Image (cartoon, rainbow, N blue to C red; front, side, top):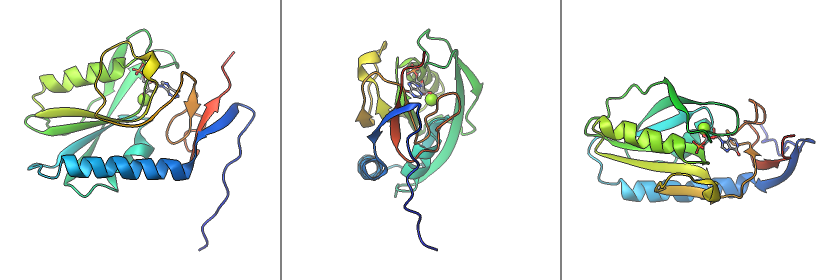
Length: 187
Ligand code: IMP
Ligand code: MG
């Protein structure tokens, strides 16, 4: 079968491609190399916890580039409203399955905005006795942070615009675009 070279075109909702697919792939490679190096001596498999739904594509690409023992887990969090979690209301909709006690945990997130989701999860996982809790985020809106969080692995810093693609959505649309695109401000 020949590989399709068709790139889905921008629709009227989208302003421009911010990060193309080739650039994404190179960066995910680099992040995987860092993780492979940092966790090369893990005894028990690293637990990768993807935050649903946005992280599922980053998690699947990243995990397939890992050469260290790891297991996949997921958590679902609700943030009220569609624009991130600005009000700081974070609620768990679906919990992980792995027992984190004594284990190394790597939270895999699509994008950090206020940082409230990550702040909540880091505390929550720490109370379960995880040996270490680190964060890998694909994107970071650094200027929007409201909490002081340390990002251990970060793909790209982006400005304060709404982005879609590579797992990220706007009202469930555009998640499966192979690139990151900027949306027109929603009226
Ligand atoms: P935080 O808790 O404010 O850091 O919110 C992070 C969450 O808001 C992410 O996991 C996304 O679900 C969502 N989010 C924030 N900015 C964007 C964006 O530009 N596009 C899509 N989702 C976003
Ligand atoms: Mg999310």
